Length: 225
Image (cartoon, rainbow, N blue to C red; front, side):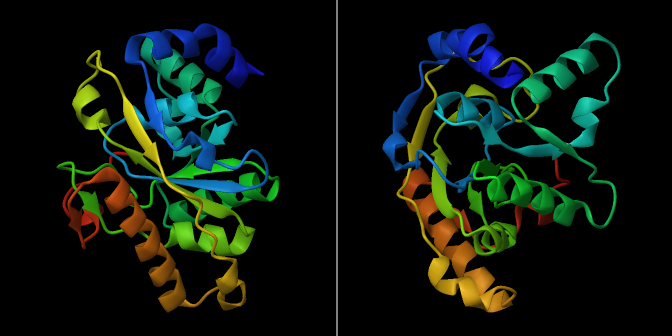
């Protein structure tokens, strides 16, 4: 209920008025059933604008620190991420990535929409980086279709390290659903998971028009998202 209150009454109308989202391909998001939104990751604000434009509730996961801050800033962060439908995950341990995938898998098995950034962290320079295979495992385990979502200019609206976003029209392009059910019997095959992930990243590269770099973004910087 809090999610829809923020989206439809409190914050959503204001964000739409200020940032005037320009969206291509919204009809590509199925109206029912489990869906994985695979997004490129340019800015902290990606987790704001992606749910904003969707007609269905979108669930992302975020590091637990966003929910445990002190003072007014901590309260605002906690309320915002809770209201946005974000689920906290402890990323301090070695099983952090699996915990995040397990959380999203529960969302998908309930027939809902899960958002994921295959790159694993924000791009350090605006280019598109190699995807991690968690998105493929989610698709194979859940049977969900994967819808590629390209954030086109959020790095211009809120560059990394910037607290206050620039007032500028946000542009998002959504591709056709990708169905990987043909690989259902090959769950756990690392080569299949890599092939699926590379296909998703190719679609994101085509949609976004960003240069693709075949290395993990996390090898270039400390993860921040």
